Amino acid sequence: MNDRQQRWQAAEHLALTLAEGGLQRMAARTLAMFLFTDQQSITAGEIAERLEASAGSVSAAVKSLLSVGLIERLPAPGSRREHYRLRDDAWAILFTSQNTVIQVMLRAAQTGIDTTTADDPAHRRLTQMRDFYQFMLGEIPAMLERWHQRQHAR
Image 1 (tube, helix red, strand yellow):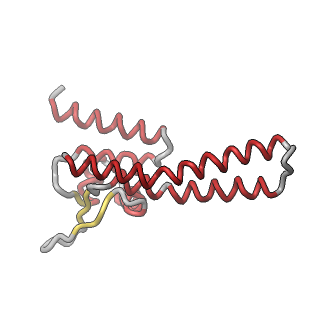
Image 2: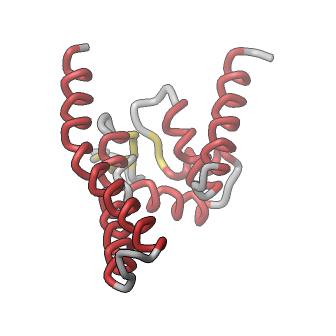
């Protein structure tokens, strides 16, 4: 097996891992394509060709990755096709977008707390859930700041 084949085998393995982690299969394969490509940007057509996938499934995957901030659309003067690339700050943006999930969990926990009494075991568990997510939400800004400082130091 040559280096290029090993590279794309690793990309497919990563995609499988991402899919097992909850990402839709085509979005996972598309994200792996962005991670493993040696090009500065790629088009949806190039992704579809490389992955041997339909244009529609690749389009949906690209929209999904755009919506969470992992990839970005680039201007491509002279080209009729839209070009995309993985954002430099993709992982921090993705993590920051998880704040929405944390807020939903906080609200759900608080709703449960409001409907239980202090001596109810559910009240204790829901309070612990709320406190955990409040802690997480409070830690995110400092953690992201440390991440940015670390990246700029390189």
